[in-house]
Structure formats: structure tokens, C-alpha cells
Amino acid sequence: MAVQTLYFVFGNKRTLFKDVVDTTVAGDTEPVATMDREWFRAACAAPGRFSTGSLRSRR
Image 1 (spheres, rainbow, N blue to C red):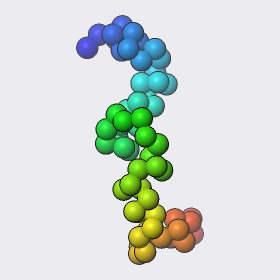
Image 2 (image 1 turned 90 degrees about the vertical axis):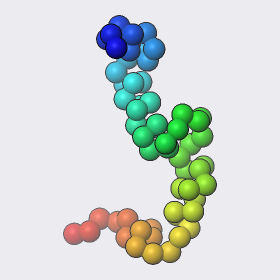
Image 3 (image 1 turned 180 degrees about the vertical axis):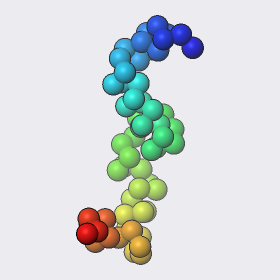
């Protein structure tokens, strides 16, 4: 793909990077915030190794 095509579609590197990260995290291109997705809510609600307390810095 030509560089000019990327700039035509995304406008700049920041927008390209944001779209890549959003698609990688979410797994699709739907305009739904990550924290509004069912899998995210289920992960936050599930007890276990990755509970809120374990997300703090481990020093």
C-alpha cells in the first residue's frame, strides 16, 4: 500500500495508530467503547486473579 493512500484514508499517523490500537483491543471496528462491551464488564465483575486490587502496582 502506498504511503499516500494511508494519509488519504487516515489523515495522519496519530489517527492510524488510534485505529490500529482500537481494533486490536476491541477485536472489531464497531463504534462501541471498550468499557461498554460485554466481555469487558464480565472481566471486571469476575472474581479472581485480575480483581481491582491486583491491578495496582506490584512493588
